[in-house]
Image (cartoon, rainbow, N blue to C red; front, side, top):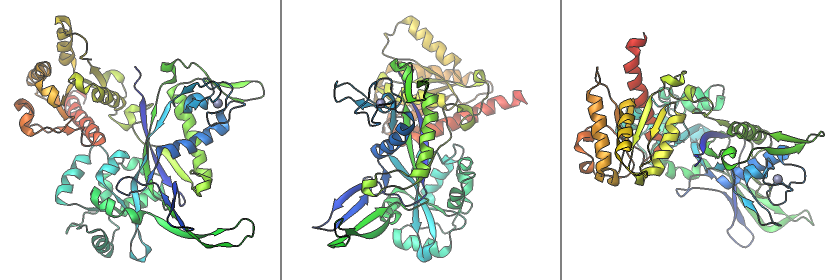
Length: 483
Ligand SMILES: [Zn+2]
């Protein structure tokens, strides 16, 4: 089975952007609203994102005779457009799903206008984390402070603006407003991007309900008159309103890459170069590279449909944790053999999340030992697992009701704790991670007092927290000897 590699991208609007649908609100008046999530916060639907990127991609890469939409193509299974983005062949009934899976674009930074036209960027810890904008070393601090100070302020938000926020969103800024928010954010990704640099100083981090209350303010609306094509005059009662996401809004979205080779695709054919068709090596890196080229077009030509007046230019770029340079964005061990070995202990019921975690820990710079519990458990397997724990630098325990009920997982916890006790000097090896809501009394007593990551609440925060623990405890262990 191939586990898709996932890359997170940030998408910044350069001009007002409309992606959404036309909503009728009366006989001749209508409203073109932007797409929103269930809290009413604007989003970029995965289908729209993918459709726009596909059209740019196909301009350069569809093979001759291909319509670029996956409906008409001479050889869709090898066409660099159809094989990658999926196709349904009308004549032969063949179809194939896409190798690139887009998620919805989530609003990371919402532009909020205060009195006098000042611009503030609103966000939440979770949205920052999903967009990869909270560095692993600080995110726990931010979350911890959130409990006592529900709002964090950038150092250039004025008192009046804080008052305005309080009035319009019903949020209570802290009496000792914290300045210098930049200490809390992963700023490397912001370098050379002036909008983000100024957003940093005028950022307000709120809780999710306040973000939802502000949702309507992240939009700008303009009224237009419908023109009769024949007469060139305005139609009677023909006002309509277009909602748009304003410039300098920031979204984040994920793309999962399925490895073409794992599906037996060995070559892709693209446009005619005069001397024949261009042949592409179908690796994940090739796809990633070509995707960046399509994103460049989105910055020049815009995304969204013309028919919904959507063309708005956006700048899209990948964030840290790149698959091709896992050590720079994550743990920072240049030598693969020096990377920590992580053993994932889990119940077979939690196989899916264990696999996802294994993949992300690898992307984060770890080596991973993931046993598959569905194999029949005999003595030799038990011995092998014992060795796995013995050789691991860390053991991540995925805690769930089935896991704590399993004597097998219990044995693994005991083995890991024994291993931890035997280290000199003693160091942390066992890292518990909840994968479902569980009362504290259900957590095994031997690890109850430990701090655990909550993968079920917010997976991105959870994995960041685990990587942070791994990094801190590895460096603690290694630094004396390596000095
Ligand atoms: Zn094609």
